[in-house]
Amino acid sequence: WLIELRYSRITGYYVENTEDFIPDWEENVDPYILIPDLSNTTYGITISHIFNPNFSYKNLFYQTERQRKSAGSFVPTFQYSYNKFTFDLEDIPDDIKFRGDSSDLSLGIGYYYTWVIGDKWFVAPNVSPAAGVSFSKSTITLDGNTTEENITFFKTVLESGLQLGYASERVIFGIAFNYDIYDYAGEEGRFINNDRTYGLLYFGYRFNSPRFLAKSYDKFAKTKFAKKMKL
View 1 (cartoon, rainbow, N blue to C red):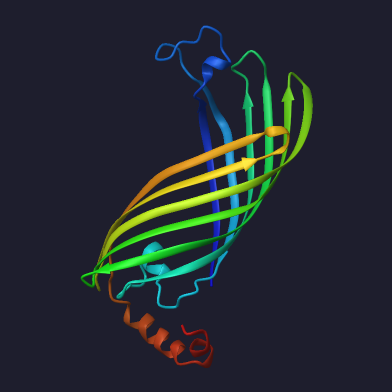
View 2: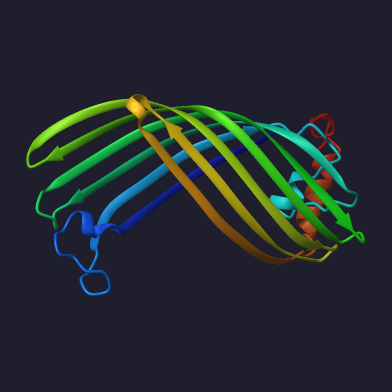
């Protein structure tokens, strides 16, 4: 089993389509609308189960293990996240205040595989389709008038990635590419698409554990609890 907790907060944005809000706005001439106090905060939890004990999830995402032989596994995952989105616009003709809260639930099943090449090099593709539901509540204040709206979205997700890496007893490094697609279909034909493309480059070196930690772990590993949990 794998349980992950997430927290992120991003503050400060600009409006790419400023021309839709300011007449006679010219790109590369006039400044974009800036929203320095726009905030997007997310809390989340992910619970996953790795079916194949011979597949090392930790080798790909935490680099605390080494995958010595090629193996793959199905990884069913349950996700819950709470998102809060707020901003206040005062630099356009109308004063706008917005607050949005949403709760997302999804269930998916991914597949990960690691090809081990020459004992130390590896190539690892993955794909994870999922589906779920999102409950959204928004409050918009325009020129002192406030309106509230509640919408339920049906959510489909496709997360995919490819990782190339090297792992020896001491040295680890690699590069990962990811492409995610999030689609939300709501009432009255409302549709939201959110795609993400991102990469990761990492390098690490494994040091020997301090002697006092190694001795403490050896004692703990001999306990009945550790043996039962296979720690």
